[in-house]
Image (tube, rainbow, N blue to C red):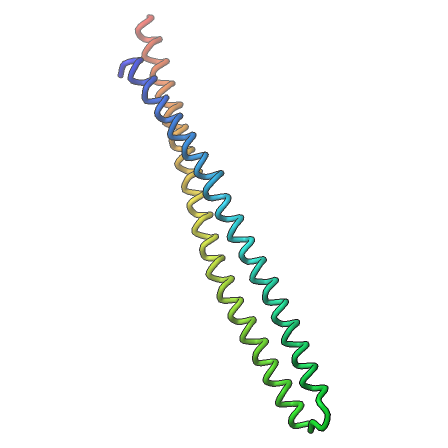
Length: 137
């Protein structure tokens, strides 16, 4: 392999490495951060919904003339609504966590690709140095 070709290959590897690093840092890392923010929003929305349901339940229980059976019915109805809201939020969060896992796998793959490219560049540089030493001798 000629010196010129080896240098050209190493330059291409460097450009590719730069693009991969850029994708990893700007694309994947930002995506993971945005997904984590989504989880926080869902958790916050769930807390607000539970607070509203609890307030509504308390208002319903404060009605005059309710029997114990009616109060129990109201409690069960609101507990069921709260449980369903929690389950829905958990499903949404689980889907987002799956997306985060996929993004982290991509990030790991990009790291491995970078390492392989750098190893190849180092090997090419080492071979080039060896060839030039052999020509010089």
